[in-house]
Length: 101
Image (tube, rainbow, N blue to C red; front, side):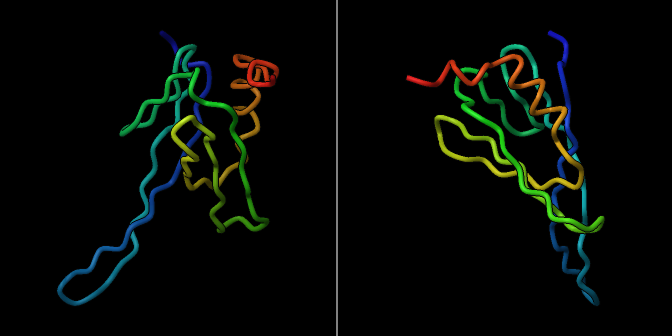
């Protein structure tokens, strides 16, 4: 199946060497498929994802957060760019009315 949308997520970790400590930033894609949302380490069936939200502070160098609201709980990813196009693609695929009683 082909990807419907992707969004770049950031992973930040500290590496401590013999003489110095440095912060290493890597990135990976969060990918939306017709049947799942996938990262390099996890896959969420589309039926178990209830919503996607985010918080993005103003300022270029600050990290924001993207939240996947799933049946297993909320999963958080760090982001730098606005994920509106990813969220719109998800909402087009899974209308909000699906989860209302």
